[in-house]
Image (cartoon, rainbow, N blue to C red; front, top):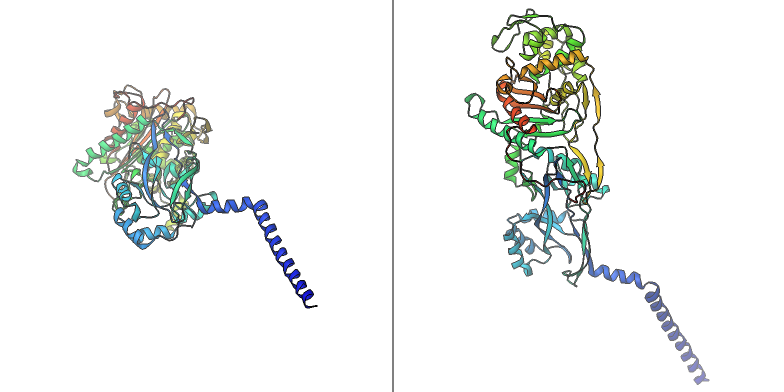
Length: 610
């Protein structure tokens, strides 16, 4: 009986062992056959990492294919925190090599989201830094050198306010754009076209599949996903005109500063556009900045030099500078007076030096005697236009100013545009709590007092006179194209407003502006012998903070206008002596007059891959 009992226990134990063994076999088979691929992927995940490769941003070309903004390879020092937090010892050594504060590096590492990707510590380092890091490779685990495409503004300051600049995304921008695929460390547009078209030109990042060892050190690249370059922009800008405008402004400012009374003439702006389409051919703001400074992260010293400059080089004065338009506004006052029948072309008004109701007069006390509309506009007579303001009243002046597009943004495809200000009763009542006075209407009629306009707005006014009253939305981008040349999007002229002026009155205004550039006109000294017929208007805007600002607006050729231009020189004095010389050089470039041989440039062809 005892033997039978022992055998029974042994049988039960054997069954249990067989059951456990079978369970293990079945589980192993399940894991091997059913879950094999899953665990294989987990194993690969432990040894394979994807290191992002930054895509090159799209290239900017001028309207003729001249490259204006490109990319260049640059060295970036990054940290791959593969095997855990980077030690203080490594951070200290890296800080010494990069001449950075260790806390600054720690701050960059602290922002890391935990994903396996390089944490960029310093961008655009020189070969000397690369050499030092390679020599001390064993002391700097996780520190890598990446070759990344860096923005290259080919002509440094040229076009800076149009192009803008790029820099690393900040926390505020990241929070707003995270849903659109942006991540920490991304390079984004901060200003100008770089900012406005960031989504189109940033491209799609690629990456390397890298095998790492047990310590997390890269062993070999086992796969690669190529980055997709961003779309390119073909601009409406003409490089020759842009360069001529910038050179002309720089030379004129230097010349004015040699004169004691104009030593503060250090800021200016110019806009050149096609009045038939609204395409911007050139846009300049001075002083300017070099957007290449922002590539590797601008230094505190360089930033302070820009930020503390009293003439604000980071402002695009062509679209954000608001100035009294001065006598250039007389074009609007004249158009309103003629259209509303407040004066006839033949009527003569006495300019005895001051107006007979309010003793406001011409600069220097000049008196032109009995003059008609044509003489008053071509010679920029104040007394005549004071009387036009008297007859029109501020409400009619406001109406026509707004018809011409003043007091609102033009809608140009650049961030930071200002509206300007149209003088009106409501504004004064709201801001100052006071009634409107006739003397303020007089000031408004000659572009002073509350009137404010940007250089772009004034260029558009000349464009409307040139093209018959049509206001086109100003545009800087002709088309967006892919890296192989295919056209992604084309921008066509867009009419956004119209001011109705009879053909008779419009021709009278045009003829009067034509006489500005002829003998006896305020710009005759510069344009009298110009080979292309020009219509223009000088202006001098009072400035309570210093010398007057000088204006000049023009278009040409007179018979078939293709170019409209507006120039302002801050604290430059009379427009005839400060702004007119700049406009002449711009128009010479636009019409290829007295120009040096063209610089060699790659010409864009829709059939050529860029």
